[in-house]
Length: 277
Image: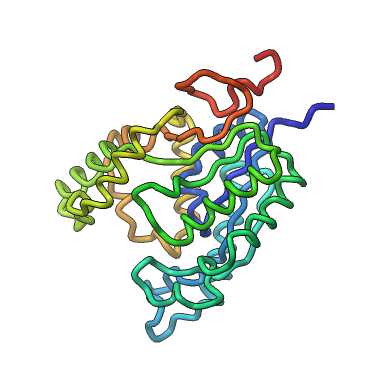
């Protein structure tokens, strides 16, 4: 018997699955088995009261338990079939000293992480594996590490027929920032960061696959707000509906491995893998 159609998404922190949850909900609705692998417990998120790591009252282990509970609720909303948590320690943001700690996920040898993800690939046998663009604009150390480990695991097992890296169009982010500035919100001046702008444009040029997720956007929003400890005051909730649909109604991917021979561009991660295709 052929393996059921299965998608595995490799993420870094609790809430990352929601911010890119459109494909999870979309394919779950189509009957695809959807597996989420979350590498860290998110210890360096905000504590209740918006208390930041290093501030009085921030208990990393308590934060982790809150975030893992939110993760379980989020994946339930999205229709995820199985959640696997690897339990590594959040590394914090790129400019924080925490990432230099030996226990930080970023400092765990990629081979070790890849071996654990490989065991899950052997268990679930996904035809499609999705993770981050490790060369993209967002160079969070945990995202980069999760991506490299996921790609290494896919290559070592040889099981996923297709591997994709998620990315965004720089034009979509510009539209978001413009809309928020019109509302008087303080937003990052990312366009002034030459390195980030370069990476963003290069990622956009590499896009091979576009997925229309507009039909599941309400569930994506619900899943995102399941992470209330991190997003209660988020700019996401302030975006006008038309801007949200324009910016988040499609997800973009770079196909980096394929054994199906499917022509590009694509509008379905499972093209070439469905019965009769």
